[in-house]
Amino acid sequence: MKPTERILTFTIEGMSCALPLGAAREVLTMAALSRPPGAPAIVEGFLDLGGQAVPVLRLDRLLGLPTWSPGVNALLLLADLGERLVAFPVSKVEDVVATGADSKILPMAETEAFNGCVRGLLQQGGQTHYLLDPARLLLVAEARRVAEFRAWEQQRLSALGPGQTATG
Image 1 (cartoon, one colour):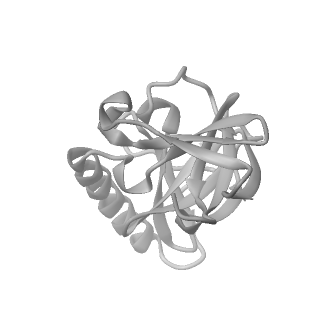
Image 2 (image 1 turned 45 degrees about the horizontal axis):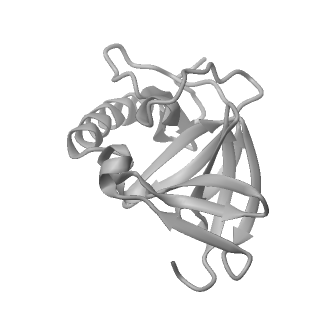
C-alpha cells in the first residue's frame, strides 16, 4: 500500500467496493443505453458520451454478486481500466478516502478473487470495502469481446452524425 493512497468508495446494492481514485473519471446519472444484440451478459449496454461509445459493465456479474437491476436512480461510475474507458452502474458513490494510519488494506491472494480482481480489503472507519484492481477486472477474452462490441457501437454512433443519439 502506498503511504497515502486516495480511494473512491461506492456501493452496489449494499456491497461496499472501492477503486483507486486515479482510475475513477466521473460520476454520471443513469442515462439511456443502447444494447447491441448478442452482447455479453457483463455488458449492460453502451453510453453515448459526446459521440464516444462507452461500454457499461455490470460489476455484479463480473464479481459473481447477487444480480440487481440498476434503475433510473442508479449512478454510472466512469472508470479507466488501463487504456479502456468504461462505466459501471452503482447504487451510491460514498466518499474519497485517503489511506493512512487509521486504515489498512488486507491483501488478498489472487486465488481468493476471480482473476485477482480484488486487490484487498480496505478497512477504514469501521467499514470494509472490496478494493478492486482496475487492470484485472476483465479477462483478456472479455476485454477483447467488449472491444469488438464497442467498435461496432462506435461505427453506429458515427453513422448517426452530430446531434443524433443512438437511443432516440
